[in-house]
Image (cartoon, rainbow, N blue to C red; front, top):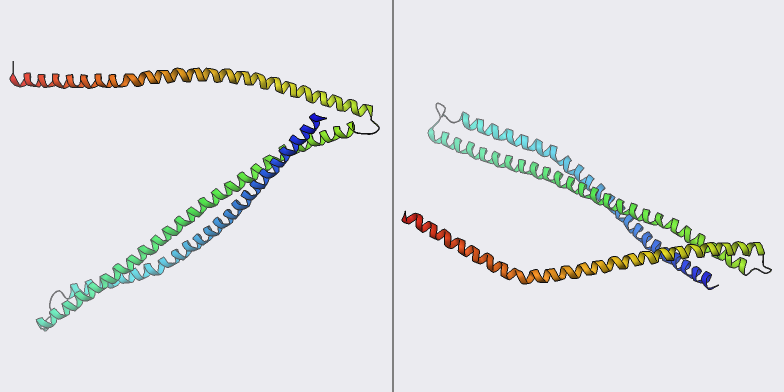
Length: 269
């Protein structure tokens, strides 16, 4: 029967389309799963970077504290030597002060460098933590994409089962129609099934026609409204220059009136 052949062809085409769609989704799923693995590996590396950066800070802080202690010691030595002791020639005392100032400058330079290293290490920790957060975002995005692909694949299964069930039903009908010898009860059941299917298709066709009529009526109304709006816009476009000219003239008149009022106020009564 032509109808059954057409239905078989339609269902087979729909199944092939579903298979192609599932293949595409499966490829996307594999890609996203690989992206999740790569993002997780990147996150692990970033976490290792955080640990390594944090491990650098305590020794550097200890070195900075030692440098600060040397600065304090040099400052105290310079303060103690600010007055010349008895019995030391002025030239020797000034030489000692110069040496102490130089030592203080060197200690301050070393302390500054030590604190700079601490700051650099702390910035390294901050950057590594930012990399961890960025990797977390990538992992979350890739995981969401994996879940979406899995959900899309799962959503295909009910439709595939429905199409396969309809195809099996048509194959059963064809088998009953072509059976030799014919089984009257089976043919009667097939006829009833075909009648029910025909009635369903007729109802669907009738509903579709009504929906089409409604859509055409709506479209006609929208086209009419669009034409009205187009005409209105065209009319407004022609009125805009005149309105702008009126606004400019009103502004000019207002400016003139303000000038006259100012003149009268200056001239007095």
